[in-house]
Amino acid sequence: MTEHTPDKEPSVTHEVVPGSADGHGHGTAVAAHADLPEQFENPGLPPHIHRHGDSDEKAAKRSELQVVTMFGLSMLFTILFIVSYFAIDEDATVTLPLSGKVAALHTALGVTLGLSILFIGLGAVHWAKTLMSDEEVVEERHPLRSDDETRASVVATLAEAGQTTQILRRPLIKMSLGGALGLFALPLGLQLLGSFGPMPRQDLEKTLWGVKLNGQNRRLMRDPDGTAIRLSDVTLGSVFHVLPEGINDTEHPLNEKVKASVILVSLDENKIKSQKQRDWGIGGVVAYSKICTHVGCPVGLYEQQTHHLLCPCHQSTFDMTEDCKVIFGPAKRPLPQLKISVDDEGYLVGDGDFAEPVGPSFWERA
Ligand code: FES
Image 1 (cartoon, rainbow, N blue to C red):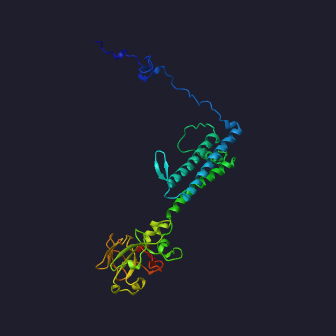
Image 2: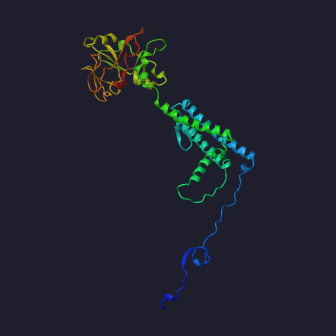
Image 3: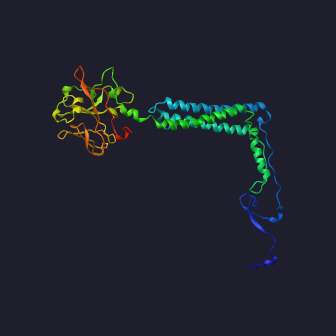
C-alpha cells in the first residue's frame, strides 16, 4: 500500500469529457484545461445562399402568382362555406371512409372553413419564404431598454416594412390577402346571425288549421290512423286524438304536429257551461288544442266522469265543461278551442285556425 503524498500531485485540473479517447467513441477521456485556448474564435455565419427570386424577377413573379393562387383558393373555400351553409339540408348525411355516416352540412362547413384558413397560412408562409427580405442580420446584445437611437431605428424599420415585404410593389398580393382575410370574417358573422334562427312568435300564431287544403277547410283526422272522422262516429263520452288533414304532406310534419294536435271529445251538451264553447262545437262535440299552456306537453288524459283533461307533465288540469279553464296546476290559461263544423259528406272539419296562439303561456303576447 502506498502512502498518499499531496505535495507530489501535478498542478493540473482534470475533468471527464465525453469523447473517444478510448478508441471506441463511447468511453470517457481526461483532458487537461491547460491545452485549451482562452477564447474560441467566432465561427461566424455560414455563407448566405441567395434564393432564385432574389436575382431572377421571373422566379419572383412565379412566387407572387403562387401566393396569389393560395389566397385565391382561400377565398374560394370561404365562398363554398357560405354556399354550403344555405344549400345543404340539415338532415342530409354523407358516408366517409373510416368515419362512416356523418352530417353532410357540418362536414362541408368544417372542410371548407379549414381549407380556407389553411390556404391563408400557406400563402403567408410562401410569401415570407420566397419574396420577403432574406437578409441575415446580426444584432449585438444590449441592455433591455433600447436606447433612443435604436427606438428611432425600429420606427424606421416599421416604416420600411411596406418596402421589404414588397406589399407596396405587389398590389395583387395586398388585394388578395385583404380579400382572403376579409372574406374569412364572414363565416363567423354568418354563423352568429344564422344561429338566431327565425323569430318564433310568428310561427306560434299560426297552425295548419288556418291553411286551406285545395280551397277547403281541413278535415279532422284520427291520430295516428290518418282517417277522417264523421260526426256520427263520435258517440257520447268518446275521445279522439286528432291531426289536420294533409299534415304528412307538409315540409315539416313534426313541427306542424306540435302546434296543431287536437283532442276531440263528445260531452253531454247540457253540461257545457260556456255558450261560446257550445257555439264552436256541434251538439256537445268539442275540439281543443292538445298542447298544454304550461310548457307544451300533450294533454292527453281525459277523465270521463269528471270531464277533466289532465296534463301528465306537471298535472295541470282543465275543465272541459267550462271552456277548458285551468282548475289545477301551473298552467295559466285555458286550452284554445278549435271551431268545428261538418262538411257536405258528413266529416268533421276545422273552421279555420285557433283564435289565439297554442302552447306555453310564456310566448303569450307581451
Ligand atoms: S306542461 Fe302541462 S302542466 Fe306542465
